[in-house]
Every structure is written in C-alpha cells, then in structure tokens.
Image (cartoon, rainbow, N blue to C red; front, side, top):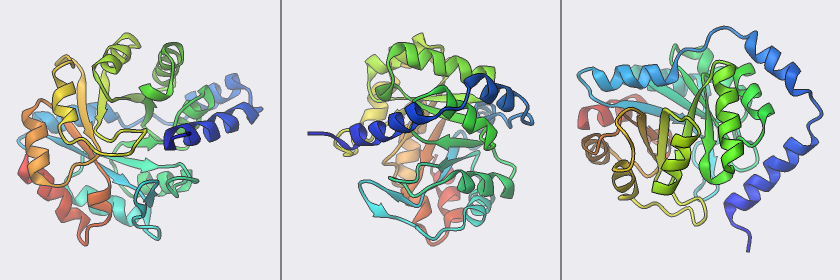
Amino acid sequence: MATYLDRILDGHRATAAADTRRTSDLVAEALAQPPARGFAAALRRARADERGLGVIAEVKRRSPSKGDLAPHLDPGAVAKAYEAGGAACLSVLTDAEWFGGSPDDLRAARAAVGLPVLRKDFTVAPADVCDARIMGADAVLLIAAALDDSELADLHGLASQVGLDALVEVHDEQEVDRALAAGATLVGVNQRDLVTFAVDHERAVRVARAMPSSVVRVAESGIRGPEDARALAAAGFDAVLVGESLVTSADPAAAVAGLLAGA
C-alpha cells in the first residue's frame, strides 16, 4: 500500500520527468539572482546570542495529516509577525497539492521581511534546486529518505553552486551518516515519520547524539511550545523549525517569542 510519502514523491518525480527545460539554462538563471541572505549563518548567529536558539518559523496552509491549518493566511503578514517575535529564518511550503502552498507564498513572505527563507518542498531534481533560487529562496530542503546517495550528493552540490544553503533532513542515525557523506553542514532531524506521519518527540534527542558539533543542527516537527524548545536546545540543537503551533496561534509573534523565552 502506497504511503503519503510515496504518493507525494511519485507526483513530484512525474512533474520533474515532464519538465523539458534545460538544466544549464536554469543554472545560469539561478546564478544571475541577487545574493542569498545566508540561512545557515542566521541560525549560527541566533544560537550564539543570548537566546541560545534559532526559530525557523513556517508559513504553512495545510498538511496531509491535519488538513487545513490556515488556508486563507496572508504570507506577508504572517512573515512580519514571525520577524517581530524574533524568528531567525522562515520556512515556506511551496507544494500545492498536499500543503496548499505556492512559489507566490514564498515570494510574498520574503518580500515582507529581511529574514532568510527556506523553500520547503520535495526536491527531487536539479530543476527544483534552481527554481528555489530563482523564486527567491535562500535555502532548499533535501530529504534523505526521498533521495538515493547519488541524488543527495548531486543536489547538495548544485545548491551550493547556485548560492543556496541546503537543509538535509534525516530521521535516524543511518541518514545522518548519508547526509554527512553528501557534504551536509546543515542537518535537520524530522520527528515526524514520513510513512505514518506520527510524531516521536524523543527522536531528535536520540539522533542528535550521532551529529557532530560542526554541523548546524535543526529539530523539526512536533515542537509544541517552550518546554520542547528548551529540551531541544539542551540536547545541542541550534534551531527548531516550527509550523503548526505557530500558524494556528492567535498571536504568532508572541508564540515565537515564547519559544525563545523557553529556550
């Protein structure tokens, strides 16, 4: 039986296979964009300041597991609230079918603030990396579970070539090893199982032990509030990526500030 991840990846790979654009043209267009804002650097600065933790605040309309979260949100307004609350970076969903996002959401959020922005999507081909840079992203997501070793290394190298940071997402210690072998210096541990979509709140703490201190470490998914943020900071994480609890909050700025206060 196909899982959520299987169906999502099948769709993205079919779209990539039908894309007739030349990679060389896309690379040239990506290289012509203005300089990126420095996603990983912003997280390092946040970890080094008195707050001790960076918050990557996510613009997210819906999810496969929860359905609609904030389908009518204004990406620019939400981004401004996150910035006011002290977020170090933004994450913006651009997948339309499963998350209700779009490149326009990313453009609007980035234009409203001065924060670096991650394109949160299912990256499966070189065109996806180039498109991220062209639409204005400062970082791209590479999911280890969705890519083989060669794809992971090649897409990571391309991201670096066109000026993007690459957040390599892992779920266990074996995937940490794969990420490091591909050259990753920015690694996120997703506490949500991409097959069942269940959240394991201890996963990030366990997997953190396999991550060298030289990488920027990000905990993703299932972060409910200040107590979780405090535990993850104590486990050695430099940042947390938080979506659902922020985008559904009545006061997103205060919710971000609360995560930082808790850390």
